[in-house]
Amino acid sequence: MHVVYRNAVLPVVFALLPNKTEQTYRRLINKLSKLCPSWNPKSIMMDFEKAVMNAFAEKFITTTNQSTISGCFFHLRQSIQRKAQELGLKTNYEQDPVFAHHVNKIAALAFLPLNDVGQGFDDLFNSLPPILHPLLNYFEDTYVGRHRPQGRSNPLFKIELWNMHQRTTDLLMRTNNLAEGWHHLLSSVTQCQYPTLWLLSTI
Image (cartoon, rainbow, N blue to C red):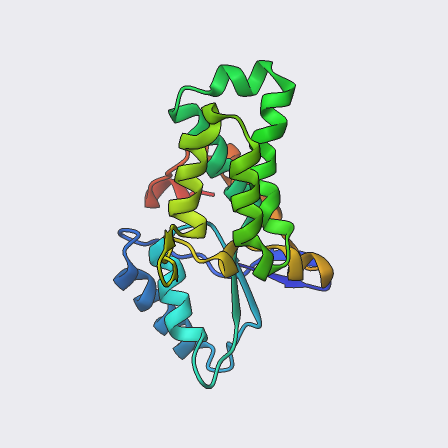
């Protein structure tokens, strides 16, 4: 876990967890809250992992705590690109600049005002070539929500979690790349992605 202090991103908590379940994240958060009772972050940014988002929202988005939770824009773009690759569109993305620009328009929806995202997505869907419709269907199910008679269904990740309009206006960070850079440095030192406890103890 990292914090922003005087425009610097600093690692403050190291936790070795047995898994990535919501229950495990709750236990971690409760332990940290006991160690630091005044811990009440105003803004929380993380990867798009439902379990950890749910655990932090349960703790910090309440009647007494009004933290904001945001996904990382870099990981939003990454999820779109990975899905494009899964759909067999990797060559199109890498070799066709116009096609790549169309794909990048999907991620750019994050910078629309919150209330304009739904209409913006519909307009984009109608303007892009049919080859991109499977990718747009994925994005709609995961990040926007399908049209229903009473409005849109709930997506896997609500628009509020990935919308960057207000963060951009407020000059706040839109990615956790600085924290990821620290993780990359640790991986380069250990020379593996998932070091053992024994290996970590030797650093």
